[in-house]
Structure formats: structure tokens, C-alpha cells
Length: 289
Image (cartoon, rainbow, N blue to C red; front, side, top):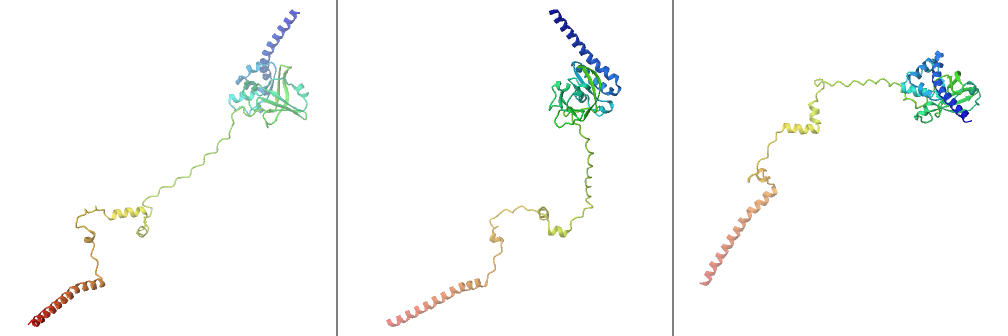
């Protein structure tokens, strides 16, 4: 009993190792038999995916013909590697299994999901069957299901299957965004040619005299009238001496004439009083005799 169990385990181990080697070899051989997949076969070799694929015992390759795959051959090697890994399904599907699927959607795990780089479900595919036809597309939300199943190219039951689809599947986020080329630069407008000073008309004297600007007034006054230093003030330099005396008015002349007449009348009154006194003294002397 123990010997039989040991032989069974040994046989299973050999089978697993042999299957692993056969998977890698069968991929290369299967593509070599069909020249219409030569471009995809060369891309698997270029991106060094044959060895990672051989680590899995059960896979399904979604193959694309040379004409259909030409739409992605201009991508970088990193982008091609990511895209091709989404065409490696970690499960077995052939024509018989696809025919037995009811009309529903199935989520498939791809080799890209095992890298740990998958995001927003771009490491998974959506397999949908509608009206007897099978379609593949990215599991990312709102991604189109436009890669249709064509035929089974190669199959080794429960080990390796290569099925043809109508077009490559490019899931969002697997490569850098490809932007359209920028529009040609708009030619700049030519800068205005500086005008010659001799061509520019000079302002007329009338305009310059009637409406000078603030700066012109200051400059013209400064240049026309030379500035002299202020004279040193002296005892004789007084406002009264510098400015002429005001002209006398008619009223002032009358007042001055009256002032001049007052002394003469006073003197006459004093003379008449003196005469009266002399006369009284003379009369008094006669009265004493």
C-alpha cells in the first residue's frame, strides 16, 4: 500500500515536470506551424514572456493574426509586454468548452494580474457569450467587448490551448497615454518697425505754448530763467525801503492842511490875549493915579 502511494506520487511529480516543459515547447512549436501568427510569436520572444508562461501548467493563449496585431506593434517593449500578458489566461478554454458555456459573462484572470501591477480590474478579462458568439474584452468598467472568438488553433486538454480572436485587447492603464501630435505653432505677428525720428512730425509752437505738459512747464521755466542765489539781507533792505510809498489821497491832503493851520490860529489867539492884558494893565495904572 505504501509502495503504491509512493509510485503514484513519483509518477505525478514526473508528469507535472514534464507538463511544465511541454507547455513552453508547445507554445513555440504551435506558433511555428502557423505563419499567420508569426508576428505574435516573435513578440513573445522579444518581450521574454516564453519563460514566465512556462511556469504555469494550464493556460490559454488568445492569439491575434499578423494583420490584426499590427495596430500595437509600434508600442514600446514595456507596453507590448503588458498587453501580451493580458492575452495569457490562467485557465483552459477550447472550442468545446466555449460551446458549453451558457450566455453569460465570466471573469478571467490573466498573467498580468500576477505581476501585482493590475489596477481597476485591468488584470482581468471579461468573456461574454451572446447569441452563440463569444466575445472577449477588458474587465475595466465600460470597456468594449469587441474581440470575437474565431477558432481554436491548438489544444492540449487541460494544459495548453491557443485560440484566435479577431483583434488585440488593450486594457486601460497598461501603457502610457498616446496623445495626438501638437498643432503647429502659430506664427507670431511681426513687431512694429520703430519710426525714424526724422519722419515723426515735431509739435507746432502754438500747441507747445498753449498746452504744455507738466514736465514741459517745469523744464522750460528752469531753462528760460536762470536761477540766482538769494541776496543777503542787510539793515537797509527792508520791505518799506524796497517798496515805493503809497500816493497821498485827497482826504489825506485835507487832514494835513488842517493840521498845519492849527498852530497859526493858536499863535494869533495867544497874541490877542497878550494885547488885552497889556491894555488892562495900562488902564489900571491910570486908575491908580
